[in-house]
Length: 123
Image (cartoon, rainbow, N blue to C red; front, side, top):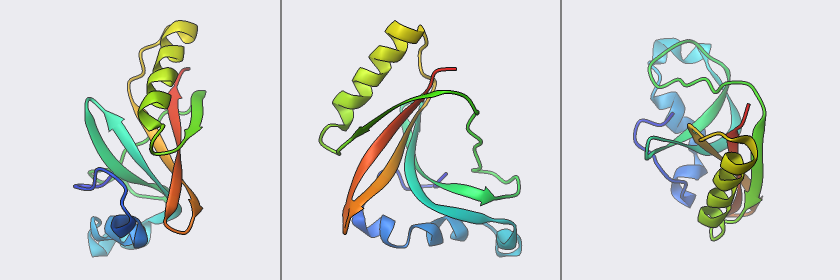
């Protein structure tokens, strides 16, 4: 999880992984390897950009998402609020759950363009 980045921009996605390596003490950086995948994690009205770790050690700022079944939808930036609300509504009505967190995976769709895959844990 980023210690200060909350939303994706062209500038912060350009050299995205360097930001996360810079949050790790240099003596521990060899214990980490990141997937080339960016996203936004939302919980308790707080948003943080994240990078997916393929190899890691336990340090502050590391968050493990639970395995399970996730309800997903693809959308554009403009559709994100409506798509997220629809996904939450479906989770409540069809699965009778109140999502604890939301994951917005950034899907690069062209040079300087991206879309989102919104994910909610349902079981």
